[in-house]
Length: 188
Image 1 (spheres, rainbow, N blue to C red):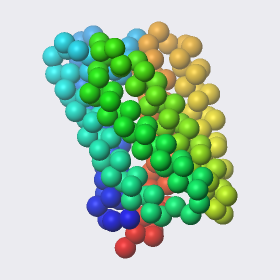
Image 2: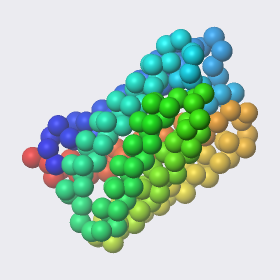
Image 3: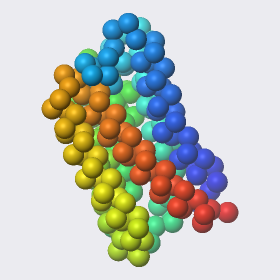
Image 4: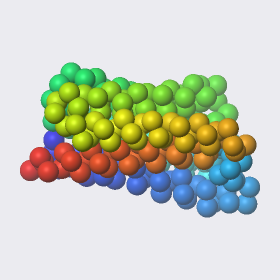
């Protein structure tokens, strides 16, 4: 892995968070985390929808570049399968920005993003356990189970899905940074 790939991995979630935060701030007169979806901030016809959509596409590009570098550090086929699925999840993230709310593919690419990234997290974590990194594997399974449980609870308790989406994104970002910092020690 090249240092620039590591930096891209570090920046990717921050770009997404900054884009979501800026879009929420711009649309604070009507957007509520408990009443809306994050995608509402990028919907077709909304002034400044590009703030969210461009940040999602940029995040996906940075994270794909990182994931390609991460692939070179993996020890077994389960880890490699998990990161391959992660790359597909990131492609779906870019497609959320390219096909914002109000376009026919939006619903499908949004769900595909959350399902594939969750699946990639779990498979990569199990692979890490198989390669002897038991602490990362235990952390992964714990984060996966808690993230989905809390996210499903939130989905049932709030009118909008932004809280559940935020829990999913935070869970994945937490896992991402733990993995990133564990592999950063091996990057020259």
